[in-house]
Image 1 (cartoon, helix red, strand yellow):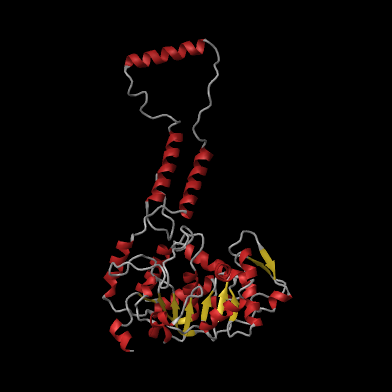
Image 2 (tube, rainbow, N blue to C red; image 1 turned 120 degrees about the horizontal axis):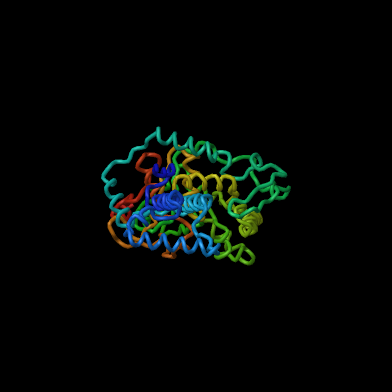
Length: 402
């Protein structure tokens, strides 16, 4: 029998080998009638004579009741093979490199000068445009979400909302950026940013994107900068930090002043529980006349980006906010540098680092596939599609003298 082909784009591993073995096993049972082909051939002549005599006596005694065979029917064996293959596609069986292996692999590349590969950049941007169209679908607008449209949530099974007059009025006419954006910094919140001295380099970009309302107080700006054009805000943050804006509206407005004239990007139509907090953010900023403007993430864009990365081997309940943002930047910007994308507990020199640059609160396990996401981004870095900053941007001496 020919070997079962490995699924296109899937990493090699023991999973499909197991599935192929199961298919071969069940197919083999049926071709041999459920018996081992050498079962009688190993018996002695005397033993075979006793067996034949026993069968003759049973036949003379008349019909007997036989228990049904427990082997699978042909269709059942095939169905089991399909089920196992589908299971292993959704939950692949392969081993990710551990932290030590990742650090060693990154260190091998650190001595090499990074160069942008314009051919690779153009090719990857074309793939994003074909699947997800970030320029048109990044945010909900009057153009892509007209009045009366039925909008399906991307994180809620079989839940949708119809765009009414009140919701439609919250959208800008079109994506409010002058595209393409030139040089973009996408700033994650990884602990690798501590003492990095990357603040000045981050702020030199034309457009700076940040994740999940991070702190930008004076103690952090030398490492993470202060400039912000767009910052994401998960509804869960509004619930935990600001009690869903039921009593903390002014506290919230004061806290986002640090982002100056920026867009706050919120997934209002991903899950039902996130819609109300997102709308409250919009109305709160409007009521206080704040400088920030809310953009609502288009669930079609988020859904398509999730499928895009799943086809490349990232299997998780949901992509991280950081990967969504990097994906958008690769479609919107001519040049992308990312900072703080390092989901490991040690840095490149083996020293322990906190999970975030501002705390060591770990995320819920099993929700995101952070190591898989990092490996995909590292692959893009090596191919010149984006630049990943992992080392210090300025030495501590230069930081103190600046």
